[in-house]
Structures are given as structure tokens and as C-alpha cells.
Image: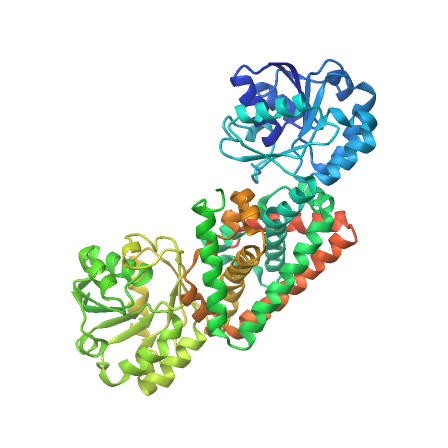
Length: 290
Length: 290
């Protein structure tokens, strides 16, 4: 039971976390902190939070758990602000999409008290945002990854894990480096591809003709290009090194496909397509979850 | 009213066309022709066709309209087979995803009688296929593009158009070259990106870890990588030149995004993402349909 939960950044991710814990009676009081007063008012009206915090320092002073659900680029400033006011028994956790850089920011900002920070990442992004998007059950069957620090108390890690477990998440732990490499590949690269494809088409002189005839294929392929630009700027910069590797790999892959098209190598093209289709089917059938 | 419609390739596209016309009483009898006996039996059982044709020659002999809904790579052989048996008043049309190459195949196969061929492309692909996927209403509000030939009789073009109109399609006409360029951009490139991304990830040594944590973003972004490999091999080769231009443009675009990541140019990245998101919203709100 958490007496006082502080959510920094009350959007889809932070808001849904609060809603689930409140509904289950696992938290007594939720204070919301954020940049947008209008968004916090919405959160209050929707019952996502109980109180709008005046500022992080005052809210943190008597917090038991602080969830940082701000864009990863905003994390360093939050840790710096948090350092002088963080109560000794308060646990801090986050929902950032990258982990190495958030951990580095926590170490820089919190110093020795980084032991109180349990890094996490719920895999439940969507292209909606703001407190109005928060909903009960968002995390059911979604992966939740913790990348605990050597300094963390085992009990703190277990507590954070138990809260996510109560939200219905599938729990996992891994190294921050592996986490960042995996998500550069399966999330950040696909987002950049979708943004790049959409911007490329939209920048053409006769873009309106293109879009008039574009169908469901392009719509679904670029759904994630509807994601929040600032948030994805931050993720992209935060996970720069693994993402550069992924972009290089994708450029090489496209060049190799181009070569097959240029040389009219139908058999090899069909192999690429068939392998891709098969891998996708295996994935969606859950063959990689065992 | 079409007395005898012959569908060559009774899958999602050809089958749904037949279903809609039959339901509206616009066709009296439908003969299905195809490679797979099992698929034709399914089509017969589902009422998609009335008769399984013995072969194209015998079915075509007393046909009023022949719809070619086979992979574009199979078109040349079909036109060659059709040439000696095509009745003088029979109209041939197609549903191929590329138009310049199908027209070239029609000219090569049919000679002067290419005047009877009205090239078309319904924009209603899906990653399902076979007669079992056929359904009434597939074409409602979907674009249907005709790329008529100078040799076509105006009345034939109007007849084909009226049948698609009866299926609920949004009718358009354009030059075959423009058609192929537009679809290289909005359909064929996105398919190749999805296939390439999926194959790239699946080919990694620890692919299972990647897919274990991949979420809805990758799933939707690669939905079209579930498309039929043989069909997409054909489309890719058929629309080779425009597609090579698109692949080159996309590689350049990815390299420019990579440069922004490498130089940590957050402002420029955010601009790319914001433009992409804005273009997508405008498109989905129908701003390009006016």
C-alpha cells in the first residue's frame, strides 16, 4: 500500500498507472505534477489524480513513491530538482523508453541516492497522449521491463514490480544496455522509418495526388508517425548509439533489396518477402514468448 | 447486365468483384478460372462463382466480360492464351497493381485487339487471399483507377466503370505512368520497407529477444509484411523503375535522418517528426481528397 504517489507527467503512461493502482486500492493519494495546468485539471476531473501539486519539491517532500513519466529528455532536470528534497525512504521509478541515459541522468542528479531509483519501462506506448488518454487496464499483458541498479534494495525492486504486476503487466528484468538495443530495433527504428516515410512523401511537389490514393497499407505502416514529436526527439537522442547502428543496418538492408530489384532477382525477392511474412506470423502466434 | 463474367484468379479481389455484381443482379453467370482446384471449389461453395471453368479458352469463348485478377507476373501468359479465343465483343479488364507493364503485356499478347482491354486497379488489397477472403462490400469507398488506352471504345470504358461504381468504388482515371509512380510511392515502397524491416530483425542472432518485447507499433508497421510473397515479387518486378527511384529516395531520406541523429540535431529531428505527423493527420482527415 502506497500512501502518497506522485506522478510527474500525467499522460497516458503515468495517468494509466495511477488509475489502475487507485482502482485496486493500492495507493491512498495521488499528486500530479506537470507543465500543463490544463492537463492537470483534466487529470483531476477524470479522477486520475487527487491533488495538483504546486511543484515537485513540495509534492516529493512527503511522497512514498515517485513515478517519472516525462519525456526522457526532461529526466535530467527532474532528477536535479529532486535530489535535495527526496525523502530517504521514498522510491523513485520511471517509465522512460530508454534506460542507459535515464540511469546516467539519475546518477548525475541523485548521486549516492541513486540507490532509491528503480528504472523501468512499460511497453504500452500509443500515439495518443495527455491525461485524457489515460485508462484502466492499459498495461494488461503488456511487457514491463525493469533494469535494476546494483545499488537498488531488493525490496524496492520487488515493490515496484508488484505494482506493475497488479496492473496486469508481464514482468521482465534485463540489463539497461540490452534493453536499449532491443528497443532501438523493435520500436525506435520503426518509429523513425514511419516518420521518415511520411515526411518523404509529404515533401513531394504533388503530395496531394499521392495521399489521395494511399490506402490502409500506408495508414497502418505509418500509424506510429502520429506519435508525439517532442517525445520521439528525446527518445531518438537518448538512444542515439544503438539507433545509429539500427539506421545503418536498415540502410544496408534497403540497399540489398534495391540490388535485387535492379537485377530483377525475383527468386531472392520472394525469399526475403516469405521470410519476413513467416517471421511475423511466428511472432504474432507467440512463438518467441516461450 | 453482363450475361457471362469470367474471373481469372478467384481470390479476394476477383471474388469480391463477382460477389457484389451477382448480389446486385448485374451479372447472370460467373465462371471461375484458376490454378488451384481447391480454391475454385471453395469459391463455388461460397457462391462466389457459379461454374468452375475447364480452361481459359473454353470459358472465354462465350464470355461478355473477363476480369483478370491474377498476380501481375502471370498476366503475359494469360493474354497470350486469350488472344486466339477472345470474342470480338468481349471486354477484358484487370485488377493488377501496376499498369504500364500489364498494358505492355496486353499489347504484346492481344495485338490489335488490345482495344478490348480496359486496364484497371481497385485499391483494396489486404494481406488475406484466396476465394474464402472474398466479401460483399469490399470496394465501398475504395478508389478504383482506370488507365484507359487510346484504342479503347468509350462505351467499354464506361461499362467497366459502371460495374465498379455499382460496387461502391470511388472512380478515377489517370495515365498509366502516373498511376505507377503514385503506387510505387504510397503502396509498393511501404510494402518493401515492411518486408525489409521484418526480415532484417528476424535475421539477427537473437531475434527471439527482439520479438518478445516488440509491441503494437511494430505489429502495425509491418502488417503489410504479411502480404503474399509471390504477388509482391511480381508487383516489385513489374513496377521496377518507379520503385528503384522510391528506394533511392528512401535511402537518402534515412541517411539524412541518420545525420540529424549523429549530430544530435534535436530541433531538426522534431521538425521532421512534426511534419510527418501533421501530414498524416491532414491525409486521414481527408484534406487531400478535395
